[in-house]
Every structure is written in structure tokens, then in C-alpha cells.
Length: 449
Image 1 (cartoon, rainbow, N blue to C red):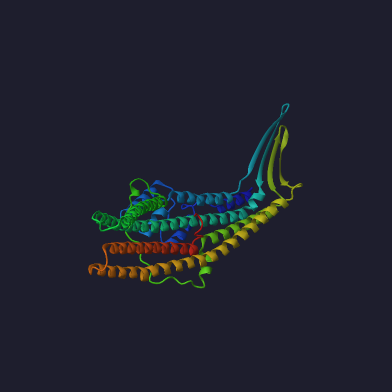
Image 2: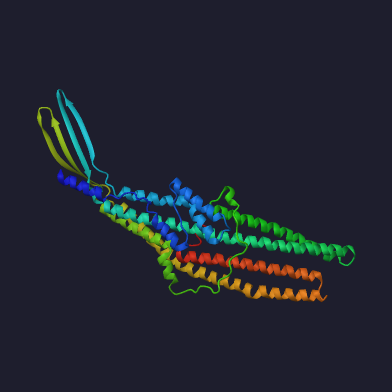
């Protein structure tokens, strides 16, 4: 029994155990590297209190894009649910590393005055021998779960970032819609007074009044868009109660001085860094190890080694051993082996598809990024300055009594419309920039839409 005891000691020493961080540190590192923000899987009340204090600290001042991302990564409830998958995968890994142990049996038989006792212990030898293959497969599945959790975190970060740009742009949109409405209201009131004294036609007055009515409707739509954008931001940050009254800055960030250039190595960078590519690769590795396990147990499903001790009244005890083999006489494992091979080839094809999609999305999102930058810069450097110069000229003509007040008001409306278009172009640029960064380092920006 001493060799058996030694084997059991070595077996117990090789068993994996549950870690304190539930193997979540890899997810935290991946998210930190790609977003510059921290994420946390909340599993205790002390951690929940710490997260709540951090969120309240960030909400105490106007929220920037990075602060919104940080709150979402700490506080989004759906993200916390996704993180639990890592803990489940770790538990499966620990379970796979542990042997099922011996099985004991005891029988008491009576024949007249004679008693017979049969004692047996069985050991699952095949299960013991295949533990390394099972562990390697579960390790690959755990790595895949970590990649998926990090990928979900990055999806939430992208959603939070884009929602912030939409919300801030909506704030600016409401402000300028109010200016247009005020100008239209002044124009309509002036037209009413001039028509009352006979200096303005009914047709022109109706046109000014119609424009004022349209701007009133546009302001209502802008305010609704602002509310919807704020609520999207509330949902992605997981806020409730008093925290929904958060503050935002009044303007979007300025455009960068120059756009990023698409280097020749960006596609390779995407293949190396994107989490969906890594997850597909690890899933393929896990299925490859599962295929090895299926092949190893193809012809023998069970190998049991048993020790027996039998005692009977008036007779010396019997001791011995037996080996039990379960041979699949009617099932040689061909179907199971074929299924495992086809699952593996399916995973290989999906991994290739993911890589092709990653390379294509880097090129596509970069093109959208450059186009959005060029358009926003065109509005900033060409259209808005031109509208400003036109307004200055119209004001000079008005002061010289060469232009009417209606021309002045109409030009003011056109200038505000140009600024609104610039705000939209600026918003579109920052959202395209977010998609490009996601496609380059994280995952497909199309997922989750």
C-alpha cells in the first residue's frame, strides 16, 4: 500500500486550487492596457463600497470621456455578470485537475449460520491518466473566458465613450437650437409689427412665422435627443437615483492637429492585440486538446483497478485484485472522434474568418476616421470662418443701411446652422476615432450594435 499512498500524495500535490483573484487579473491587465482605465469584478461588500466611493468621486465634477469609461468599467451591472464567466471557467479548471478518487463497496452475505463479508476498493486509472489532457483543455477554455470578459469590457468602454460624445454634442445642439429659435422669434415679431403698419406683406410675414414655428419644433426635437443621449449614458454607466443628475462639459474636445497615419504594421498589430482574434485562437487550441482526449479514450472508456478482501465464517480470508476494462464492442468511438475533428475544423475556419474580418475592419475604420477628420477640419478651417466673414460683411452693410434687419437675422440663422454642422462633424470624428481604436486593439466595433 505504500506505493499507492505515494501516488495519492503526488496526485493531491498536483491538484489546482481556486485563486484569490479568480484568475481575473489577466482581464484587468488587458482592459487597463487598452483603455487606460481600471475595471473590477465586485465579489464582496467591501469591494462594492470601494467602487461606490470611486464612482461618487468621479460624479462630483463634470464628466469627461475617460471618466465615463472608468465609471462604466466599474459600475455597469451587465459587465459584472459577464465577469462571473471567468470564475465559472476557473472552477471548471480546478474540477478537471482533481481525480474522482477511489470507490468503495461492502457486502454482507448470509448462508444459514455462515456469514460472508466482501470488501472492495476501485480506482479509476483512465481518469487519473487523462487528467493532464483535461487540465490543458480547461486552461485553454479559461483563457478564452478571460478574453471574452475583457472583450465585453472593451465593448462597454466603447459604448460609454460614444454615448459621451453624443451627449455632449446634444448639449451643444440644444444651445444653438435655442439661438436659432430666438433669432426666428425676433424676426417673426418684427415681421408682425411691420405688417401691422403696412410695411410688410402678408406672404413675407407668413414665411417668417412659419420659420419660427419650425425652429420651435426643432428645439423640441433637440431637447428630446439630449434627454435620450443622457439616458443612454446613464444605462451604460449603471447609474440610478441621485447620480443620474451628472454634469457634462459644454463642448466637445477640439480636433487633433493632425490625423494618425495608417502604418504598414497596423493590420499585424490588430491580429496580435485584438481580443476576439485571441479568443478564437484559444478556442481552437482548446478543441485541439479535446480532440487528443477523445482519441485517447476512443477504444477504452473505462479502466478500473480494484483491491478485494473477502472473509467467510470458518474460512481464511481471501485477498486479491482485479482490473475492469469497458470495451466498446458496438461503438469504437468513430462517431465521437469524427465529431471532435469536425468541431476542431469548424473552430479553425472561424479563427481564419475572425482574422480576415479584423484586417478588413482596421482598413475600413481607418478610412472612416480619416474621412471624418477631413470633413470636421473642412468645417473648422473653411466653412465656419467663411460664415463668420459673411456675417461681418452683412453687419457692416446693415450698419450702413444697405441691408435690412431680416437679412441680418437670416444670416445669423445660417451661421448657427453652419456651427451645428461643424458640431456634428466633430462628434462623428470622435466616434469614428473610437471605432478605429476598437478595431485596432480590442474587437469588432460592429459587435453589440
